[in-house]
Each structure stands twice: as C-alpha cells, then as structure tokens.
Length: 275
Image (cartoon, rainbow, N blue to C red):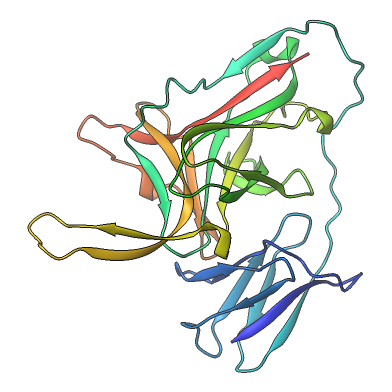
C-alpha cells in the first residue's frame, strides 16, 4: 500500500508524518514529498497519522495508492513577547550527568516516540522561558535526524497534544553527543501544569544502518536494520517521567520495573530556563 500525506487546505506535501497501524508496532514516516509505503499492512487495518501542526487522522487501509488529507490545527499556547536581558539568570532542569550512559532507546524500524515529563516548580517563576533543550544521543552514522515535539499534559498528567505547531528537526554527529536545540525564538513559557519533550524517530533513508551483532551462545552474526539516533536513558528511582508512543497510543509500561531496585529508565533530556 502506497500513499501521500497532504495538507487539506493547501495540498502541500507533509514530510515527517508519523504513520502507524493502530495498536501495533508497525509504521513508517512520510518522506520530504509526503510519500510513504507499507509492506506488512493488510486491507481494512486502521492507520493513525500524527504530524505536528495537524489534527490526528484515522484512515482505513485499502489496496490502492491513496491521498490522505490532514486538517491544519489551530494552537493556543503560552508564548510571550520578551525583551532581551543582559546576562539573564538561568536554571538547569534534569541536568545530563555525563556522556557515559550504557542504556539507550533504539528504533528497529517503527516510528515510535519517547517523551519525558517536566513538572512545574515554583522556583521556575524567576526563569519561566525555555531557552534550550539538550538531548544525549548516540549515532553510528553522521547526520542522522530526529524530530522534537513539545506536548501538553492533560488533567491526569498524561501526554496530550502538541503545543508547538512546527517540527523541530535536529541533526546528530557520529558517536555520543549532547545535542542542543535553541528554542528561545519561540518565547515559550513553562506551563503551570507541566509539559512533555518528545523525541521522534524518523524512518527515512538518511537514518538507516545495518546493526551487526552476536547473541550470547551463538556463533553466527545477526544483521538487524535500525534507524539512528539512539537516545540515552539513565536508571532512576521515583516517579516515572518517561512515556512511549506507538500504534496511536501513549503508555509507560515499557519503562517500569527496570531493575530489582525499583528503578526506571529516565530519558536524558535537559532544559535550560531563562528570564
């Protein structure tokens, strides 16, 4: 099954749309021309299409080439107008301790997302503007790309809807690096009910590589198709802050009970706040 994702109002192609079969780990990403295709999909299965700046779309699969039109979304967000301050104060939230992380979230070919919740604290009043987002990545190739999505928290504290109506595409270097994305131009104020920063894998050729490895007790090497980058996650105790998205749903179960010590994997995302 092949198709194209288009803006319903302008008929322009929509790149980097997250396309998955509902309630499964099967999915893909639209390319720069909005095109996508599935090999595993069956007729009458439901596609869930999520793309920044558009309403979520549910579409029943068929055996023809299709056009899927997404409705642009209107955003009401806490952006503010600010005047530059010389030597502004800064607050670092969830600082990344180091680059020597041994746990990484990987993508084996389905377009999932992982998100970390950031809870509002009263001390953030003096530095309410999010200036930078820092993410610890590990990439086998140079130039792998990923999307950053800023997502609201609903009344139950669960991931809800995109707050920022545009893709924040970041690019990595080969190896382990802390990637810094400056969003100061958005003038985005820390919401009182908190928010999520999500990293979204892109199933595109630029990110594809063959991962060759050997399982314990086996002699023959295995060859697995993966998509970079990998995202670091440190073991941590306390309230679980990390969520994952696939098949059209958010969940926490894959990060619970990480070890016998009651730890979970906390996604290595750091915020820099300013006045």
